[in-house]
Length: 218
Image (cartoon, rainbow, N blue to C red):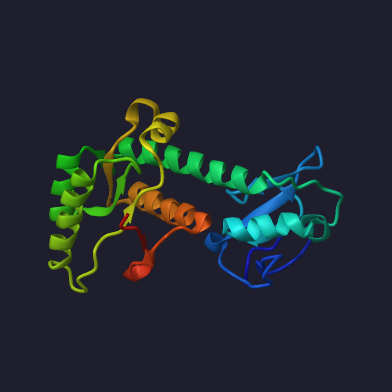
C-alpha cells in the first residue's frame, strides 16, 4: 500500500501515465497558498497531493495537458517553467547531500583520492564535472574497470556527469570538485540515490548499470 494522503487516496499513481510506483520513482506536488503548483520533494507538505513520474518529459506533459488542477481538485497554475524548477530543486538537494556526506567523511574529492577509493572498492560511485579533462576521466574509468574484476558480478560502479565546474561552484561553493566519489555509509548512499534520480529525471542516462545504478560514460 502506498502512503495515504489527507484526502484518503491510497497508492501513488502518476497523473499522466496512470502507473503506480514507489515514492522514489515519483514526485509529489501540492497546491501552494498562491495557487501555484509546488513540488514536494521531501513528501512532507500538508494537504492533497498528486504524483507525477520523476521524468522531465512527464512533468512537462502534465503541465501541457493541465492535469494538476484536475488531480488537486482546485484552480492551480502550472507554468512551463515547472519542469526546470523541479530540476533545480533536485540539483540543490543533491548539492546539500554532497556537503553533508563530505562532513561525514563519505564524499571525497580529487582525482588521486578518487582513484585510490575506487581501486580499494571503497567507492559507491564517482562524479565528474561535465567539462572535466578527458584524460582525468579516462584514468578513473580505468580504475573502475580494474576494480570490477574484483567483485563477484564484475559490475563497474556508476559514473555521473551532472554539472559543469561552474554549476558545481554555484551548488557547493568552495567544496566544488572536478572529480569526486561517494563512499559507503548512509550519507554516501543518499548522494548516489539522489544522483540517480536527477539523471533519470533529465532522461540523458546512457545505460543502466546492474543493481539499479545508472551509469554514464560520456
